[in-house]
Length: 470
Image (cartoon, rainbow, N blue to C red; front, side):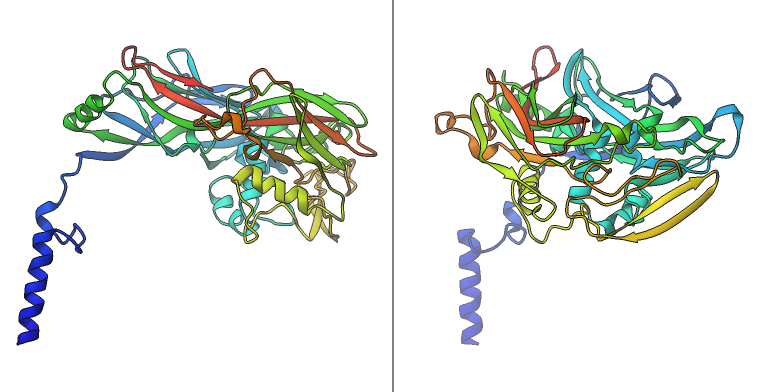
């Protein structure tokens, strides 16, 4: 009984002192939550109901006071069918190039004429990021159901087979503005517009040139933008407005700039236009012209092209000071630098899908598929020699389509004199930037460069227009 009295005395002392108990148990101090609700909205395209390759799709986001778009939960849903030349109903062998991302070349977000985010080279970039970040096992599940991957590890560059009936795909919007996991104000004087540019037919699919029923185009229908909106009530919005006063509503994102160029045989030194107050990293991917020009190439496939070392020159500073070196027997350093540039850290337990221990060839003659396994180990992020016609068999090696890419992080090279900056990247405004490749046997190729940089999105409290400042 004595112990019971001591326990009660101690318990009530704790209550009176408002300590040692979680607030959920101390009922008299529960805070009042801001009244809000989250709901899903489905937005139809404003410029048409059906589309073909090389066209653009526009979505105008709904304007509403106290409404905010959840940027981490936006996706594009659409139905894609093969459109036959001559009206034929047969389209055997019309495969997506890796996934549905190959059908998109560029994504632009704007407001009142102000560009908030503009990412070109969208398909190859997303393919690279997915292969670096997703295991082959995940590509066999959600990869097949959502983004149209084949789910066949031995043929990872070959996507879903399309026919004239069509299939549904979901494109998660995860780059640029949509990577910020922030809320975008929709109480703007002009609507926020998302514009999706569709890729050319050649870039979107693997199309066998020896198929007499080769389709001429793709049909995109039932196109919808799926999004989640957070709606504040008037009191909560007023509280936020009073807290901000005359200041802008600001948040930062990591956006991506792209430049594509061609280079001849031999070593390359390419000047890049990526001049920003906070440049975080740069990525390079290459496609060899002698393969691409066959008309049966993969825009998602990336060749090593006999590159033996690479580095950046920024305003005369060599980054990194020791060139990144690689060979077919030593790819670990390049792989490590890629993960550092993309994720800021290298995780040995990370499961990507860049390397495969064996490959297969795919030959299509009309409607017939002949799959022949060959076994090899290619320590250059190479993974397949997919061929879609008997006339053009890729030879496994340095120049064939694979998964190689190179990326260099710049966040470790921020000078001490720039320590007051709130951004974590390197200030390259006023500096000349060049990417340099060296190696014996480098063939002519097409190079895509991507610059990842910090950008601040602001809502002007007077004009109610969103702007971006990098």
